[in-house]
Image 1 (cartoon, one colour):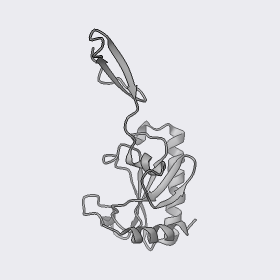
Image 2: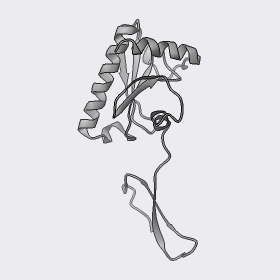
Image 3: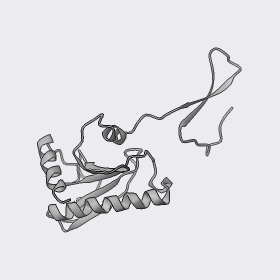
Length: 162
């Protein structure tokens, strides 16, 4: 039995025959693997966290376009930003605004650029990028490779803006 292409559930669904009963098509629900962002939220992997509340987290991108590049992420895993509930989407942007204002106070830049790409990690995230030129938000250029110490220093500076 095949599911229609547009069939979806909150959890991934697998329709299969079991080896014990080849004639039985059983539905098995399983949670998809946690995104790398969920692992950061759960403190399973380290990150330079800039700000956090009960529904959102902001941390430095470990492969930034420029120093101070921050990712703002909802704690609830959602793959596509426009699948978020309207209130959740608005709250995410309000949280991002708080982070951007702290960045504006502490990082020498013309303004904070905003981008939502959504192709690299299947978990909604907003890029906040300190801009000096238009090229600072060019995602096709090589990323910076900052040391753990450099990332920690930048994070501390931004946290000072709250």
